Amino acid sequence: MADTKKEHYVPRCYLENFASNSKRIEVFDKWKLMVRHNQDIKNVAMENGFYDLDLLDMLNRIDAEKSEPTRRDIMSYMGTNCWDDVVSLLGDKRFVEKEHFANLEGVYSKLLKVIIQKSYNGNRWVLRNCSAMSKNEKVLFSFFVAIQFLRTPKFRNTLADMVEGMAQTLAYKSQMSKENALPKEAFAVDANRDYIKLQHSAMILDPEVALHIAETMVDHIWIMCVNKTNIPFFTSDDPLIRIPHKQDEFRSYSGFASDKIEIAFPISSSLLLCMYDKKTYGHLFNDRQFYVMQDIEEVNYYNMYQVINSYRCVFATEDHFATAKKYCEDHPELQAYHSTVEVL
View 1 (cartoon, one colour):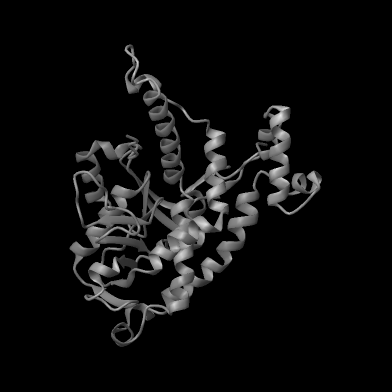
View 2: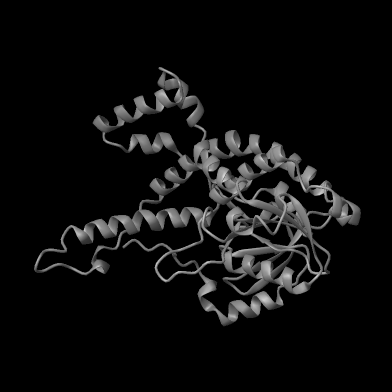
């Protein structure tokens, strides 16, 4: 039997909040323009061996004189002078999944339940008089949202695009002054998949990467939107969306700290967390307040952003994907992954 394991890049404890009581969910696959009904959440937003790393095999493929310094660096990082200690830990290809995410997701699951409970199913008095979460819960939740942003296939592909784009640009520029200089397209690069997977894992495991993103989000104004319509909020295989409200021909304003940025993260079928640039929107909202959505168009607006931003699949409690399917039919560029990275 093959040594494979389903590894979720969107955790099940999160997907449960968009599923039926039997943990079944509706899936819209925008690449195939099809809806898959009544899917078990164990079988969505996952990939066999997505985080698996055979680090020892990678080391064995490095030239002997280069591998020894690498081994010393790894031992130093792990706080040991014995290579056997490293082997016993990193010999497990599922280290990232078992030792990192398994520990985090227990806390994440409890925090999600606390935040959902605080809306009291949209109780009017609560929504008018209470905060959506405490300051401490806001800080902690920002860390989990940042991790979700980092752990997806789309992020890994973007990382590969950046590596390939940088290598291509450097190679092209190194010969630009020559009379017989080749066009940039002649230097197309395919990054080694093991290398990209290793770099992706390093970013996931480095708490400073997630903390930097989390600190930026914490500085925003947070609004908890409560869905009072009969259309559920969608989520996706890349659920954290950034909506730039400032446009420029030469500069992107879609960064986490950009002027007029809006960041949205669905929490359940009835709750959506929106984060707003404090400088622009601080006078309009109180931090951590509730906002009631009664207009279907508002819900559809954020749902459509989930469709556009998703890597491939969108998830919901019920099949309300007709508009999403039509939009993807009209915009065929959404039916495959396309790089958004441009290195000049």
